[in-house]
Amino acid sequence: MNLLVITNLYPPQELGGYGRSIADFVWGLQQHGHRVQIISSDAPHLGISSSKGPNNEEVDRRLQLKGTYEGGVKHIQDKQDLAAIDSANAALLNSWLSQEHWDGVLLGNLDLIGPELLPKLLEKSIPVQHHVGFVHPPFPASLWPHQGSYRMVAASQAVRRALTEAGLLIKEEAVIYPGARIDLFGSSVTGMPRPLPATGAPDRPLKICFAGLLMVSKGAHTLIEALIHLRQQGLAIQASLAGDKFQSGYQEQLEQLLAKHELADMVQFVGQLNRQNLARFYALHHVGVFPSIHPEAFGIVAAEMMASGLALVTSGVGGAAELIEDGISGLLFEAGDAADLAECLKRLILEPYFTINMARKGQTRVEKKFSVMVAAKQLEEWFQRESFEIKNQSVQTF
Image (tube, rainbow, N blue to C red):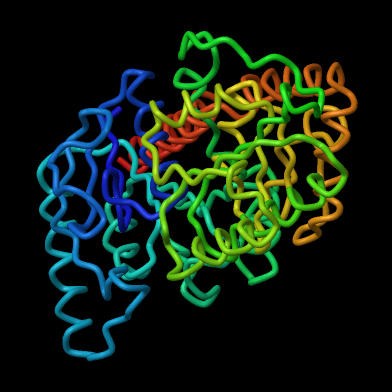
């Protein structure tokens, strides 16, 4: 199939899991033999401006945004400027739609784009799947497109419920989990052996990792506070935090808290890592902690931790809870509750065989249910079914 992808940001220019998940879908669709063309914006402050994506796909970065993410989200307010942007984007889209035949369109994040492109897409009788990776609706229910072949797909059941509550028409089966690139993670990929089980003794500390933007909503402070609890109980721990300094002063506050409790030598901040280095980073640890405070659409980082063979401990907010079966393939703790998180981590120290088995079950669960290839297959099947129905309708009309 010939597929078009439209999203506001595209790697290497991205801000989080949503943009990365769309790129992963593209990789999965390419693995199934489909050609994919990307239309996105150019945001040089987020990365290099490249006409090629991470999967060597063609990227047209001429889409205009109605604002910027530089220094925080800033929206353009002038109505004439907004109208000019809509006109330019419509012309760009029309040029692509008129160049060749498209079997389907995958929409990603429409923030700072808006739904104004939808009518132009749907009048062309092209199947459109709109994958929503946030727990808030991409547009009001009043703007729901009633013509053409359009379906909105949620990144989790939690997202689907949120969209339904907002008045959008999301079928229960219209959930496609973003998933992990399991081909990039795990000891079979890195060639690195798993660390010996932790005992809590100084020579066998529990090795814990966090990966994500360093900002309050991602909950790294909850992890730091939990480490303080464990240290006060005489348990040996080591922790590493990977992620960009997204919120001004936040990492410094964490470092001050660590210094106050004499934990600075046991916790390191390694900065932002690419996927290859992230895979090696995970391989050095026993446990991955996903301590988000605000609802997540899914939690790609958590899925990648599980794919790496880590025991996952998660706050489970939003769609993140759907990744695990509590006590079987991961552990849940109350979001923001450092004492509860500390108890989960303590259990993983005191019960090493439970920890090993839980990590293995989590890895198997991701491979079977939450891999990118599973998601790509679901996207592919809907495009093929809708394309067939559109062709049949055309034949019957003729």
